[in-house]
Image 1 (cartoon, rainbow, N blue to C red):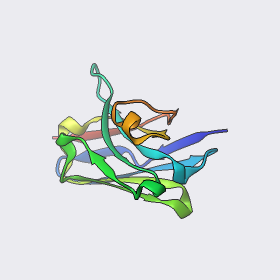
Image 2: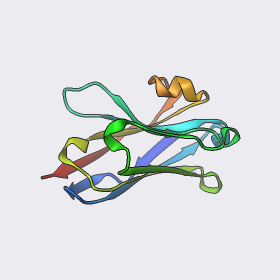
Image 3: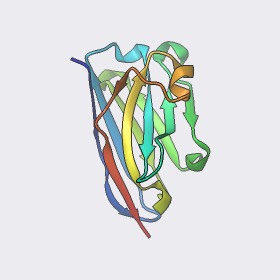
Length: 125
């Protein structure tokens, strides 16, 4: 059974930090691009960041609003992807979803083979 289990969300004040984790199971972790989307109330889901498969040397992508503040990384030994979020802003408030795709380009346009259930991030002003 494929699973993507997110954790690390919560309530934080503006300027604070959170680290999201996504533990993957049920598929070959190293062969997949894995990353994060977010969806704020009343808005469409948008890509935040992703990191390519191990064979593609872990190329990373960040959406413009989070560049310089968020850092994505992956730990193959733990089948886990992390999203370190610093200098959080109220506009970062959303449900964050972990997702996986075996194609980096497809992930970039919002397609995923697998999705997690999401974790809420709330940033207060």
